[in-house]
Image (tube, rainbow, N blue to C red; front, side, top):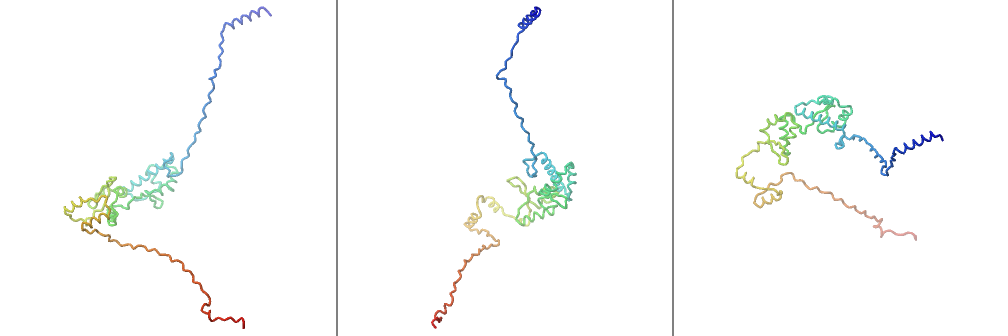
Length: 275
């Protein structure tokens, strides 16, 4: 080998020995961690049932919102005295809901409005359906009289306010002919007809006896027994007596009588075989 090459080789080895080299070993813990699988996102399909309020999605919420605004508007129109029916387009126009799509309109026409107890349909148009058939002071007073005569009691003020147009004004006109009673259970007012023909003076002694007599927890039979012991005849029921229904008793089947032939000729018949 050439001496110049030997010198270059020795110089290269010296330089290589002078520069340190570090060997990096792989650790056992450096194991690649697999990525978790991605979850599949499933889209929920909105329910087509109009009565499924609990599973209501954005589309059905919008539909029922449109229906709610319609019912409120029709109720307000009725209370203001407007009695002419409206078409669906007129209702949507008055409630500022002209952006309702064809599917919502179809649902209102075929399902929502016909099945709503607060809406009545007249020749393809719609009106509010009040709980009481009253329109003015005369019809309201007539209804209260009928309830009083038939023993139906009073009428809730809430139903009157929902049914009677200009309710506050009309009820003020009827103050002298009605009685207002507040129900203790829910604090709601009940309106009764004030029949002035049955007003008569009662002595204070009887009023005090009436107020001091307690019949809580007593039945009609117990009250009647107490009055009889005190020598007071209790009022008996004067209504028509209903006769008990007699059930028809099914008759048992009669056995058919056996017919024996010619028993009355037993002593007369003769045998002529030997002749």
